[in-house]
Amino acid sequence: MSKSYRVKLEKEHLIFSAAHFITFAGNICERIHGHNYRVFAEVEAPLDENQYVIDFIALRDTLKEITESLDHHVLLPTTHEQIIVTPDDKEVLVTFEDRRWIFPLGDCVLLPLANTTAELIADYIATELLKRFKAKGITQLDELVVGVDENEGQWGVVTRTGDDLSVEGVQDH
Ligand SMILES: [Zn+2]
Image (cartoon, rainbow, N blue to C red; front, side, top):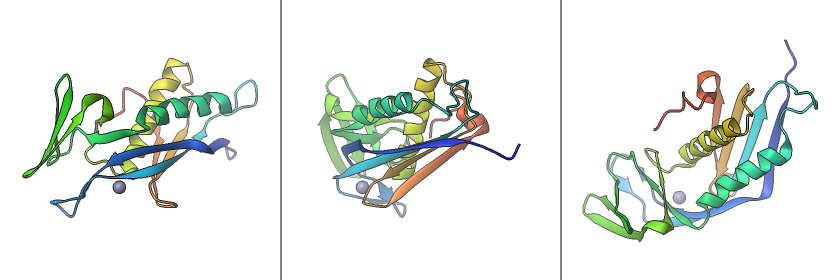
């Protein structure tokens, strides 16, 4: 087969504003700061009985649910080796070497990521999309691409194919 179809969704309202900080170059840890993140998603799949790859509205609404869950939160990585995130029932204590941050639990989203880079946030959004697609019976995907722009054209992009499209195959990072 030499023909394939995909849809791409990139819309003004698929933006979320969030705070984060990452480490780089080993042990350099940024100060906390924010981005107005933008998101796009592309889905490749066989055409269904409607001659759709996927219903745009379903894709849009599902992506919007995910961006809303991140909007106006502090994004914290739970599998980072040096940024240690310890939640209790009210607060989250975060440490990096001798630095400490304490946030109200409800202000944070704890992400199973090794660093909150745009690439890994894109991968998290891809995982959440796949979970929600599965719950809605949307399972015939050939490829899923998710991009996250953290600064006016600086996109981190993940492409999922094969086993990485199955929610069972989804790995924590
Ligand atoms: Zn940043």
